[in-house]
Image (cartoon, rainbow, N blue to C red; front, side, top):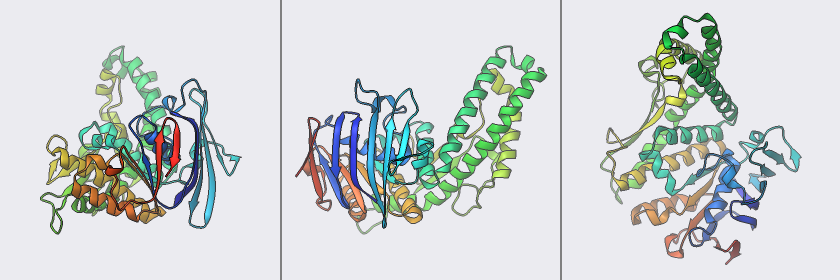
Length: 391
């Protein structure tokens, strides 16, 4: 898979950008703040309908403009599709495929697959659980686009349920627990939370089980000394708010596939058991929104224990594992490397460059030429003052 053409209009700092592209490395060189990352952000948006830098669409539209446009010609094997996304904060975004409008923007999901590695990825190891949940869900949507709708519906139900818990709980948890009307209304949201949450949870568990071997292998390749093995092995484990109610082998490479019906019952039972605590706190305490991806190194949690260099290696291993998983299942994804080589030592740079040089298409950004490994000799653009100049 690769982009043959990319056009941006009023996206971030770009009033207009037009790139004719091909397979292999595409290197963008320029000082910080000149718009290199914005180009990669736009490519990533095509794959996930989200940004790796911000949580809302508003910052993606150029100052004093009402909308932004991303248009790309996507080549996958012998097929080419033109995908257009119109981003309009405060309104409904629009999407087109081959100039024809589609019902919803998420109907374009699955056309483009990307894996992006950026300095922000250090938060996958050192940051809050929300960062790791987002990592799993973004990868999950690329793996199976229908989960974009499930995740959206789950978030909607969660907001409604939390609002009801908060308003009902103000009268006191015990009084609310004795109110038949409040309980019957809450039961409706409980049912939807369990059903949607079980689908999302099952998909995450299976994803982690499939991703774990790739993560371990990628870390071995990155952190091992030339001709040797790393001192510690890397692992990932899914930590659910269900705790011991979750079958122990779910989410492990050796375990069985997650059963949605079993998880619906487990979530439903757990929600009922936590009713009083939820009413007291006015928030939903059970569900995928409370879960985490635990990253371990040598059997210990990486967060708080891994060194800075080890944390970088783990973050990179997660991204390269994602790349291998998508490549096995959906064909070659586009690799996006945003100013990361300057952060890596010589050995890790060489390992990453080796993988990147084999990709069908890879975008690389750097402040100076010296930060780009020699293996990634391809088309180069200088980025400066709103212009892209091909060298």
